[in-house]
Length: 428
Ligand code: 5AD
Ligand code: SF4
Image (cartoon, rainbow, N blue to C red; front, side):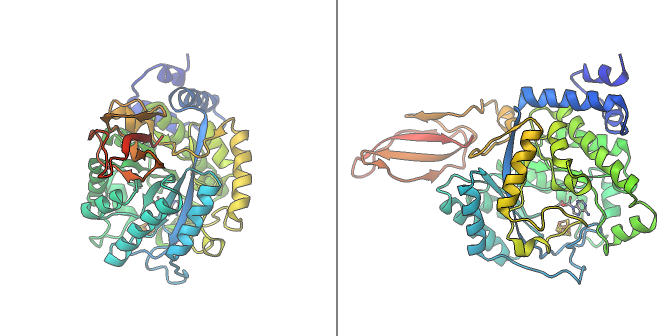
């Protein structure tokens, strides 16, 4: 028995086990074992279905100055843009009509009231143009609890906020020490999002300077300790003109061999996370493809089950470059769709069209069977049930969202006595 097969046979992985798996190098036959085992767990626990989230990068204006990021505030040569509400809704409509099931609304971080109102309006608009059927993930950074609650009420049900690095010490080397980039605040935001009831996603950059296999093992243990539902992580890629990118380049850390190492680490992290966390959603991120043409497919084979095809307007794609060599910026959404479907097939998955593809972990944690279901009549609203459609004698009468799980629902009649019952539509 090899060391890895011994590790795989155990249900609980220690920090040493995780570090060993993550650190396996290209060419080591144990890497095949790792990937196969992760793929088996994926098949058993979440199924070989890839769910799409159309990624709408709606603005590259950011108040933060993360040392690695190509759209950081101080990067003066970046052309800044803001999509209009109509543009966002047009993209959402395309996404819905192309059966993607969900969108991710992503932008640089802003906390001003205008931005908060705009995001809320966009959330309500997306629900409106998709007849309440598009799932929505938000990825717009650190906010107050009140803001997170407003957006949850407006229709967002998943939130992505990468911790970037679970070690506060390493985090502090990646961000300016100006009081606005605090690990403790980010960690607190994740806990708040969980408390509110979002499906919460986080993740890290992989292959950062100074980061060890033990740090990456700690990242996975951090995901686990926090009860994270979704993981979005990918290799660090140099962005020239940023403080970290220029340093890495000057120190010889941007060679083909170094990039390849980060790519392999990225795949190993997906596999180890799948084996350790089992029923979470894991994205095969675009950054993987930034380092290898088949990066995302290999991510799916290593245990990922989520893809985030870019649906940003073509004229804004080049301005949303967090790192150099971002793929897909020349493509239209139609081209991306065709290309991606082929990639998913190659990886042996099918596409979960028209489905939210929510995190099974989220439901499992609440003791609720996430199987698709439609119920009629009296009942208690379970997690995942976000839409209640009162039925009247003339058919569908209206849609109301119920953000509170566990709420008792009784069939009611309206003043005309026409509501006969209610159908609870699962988000699944
Ligand atoms: N390389 C890889 N990922 C990056 N991100 C930002 N800059 C880079 C980079 N140079 C990631 C961060 C952020 C997400 C939106 O993009 O993890 O959370
Ligand atoms: Fe802004 Fe996010 Fe880039 Fe940091 S990583 S500078 S918060 S867009």
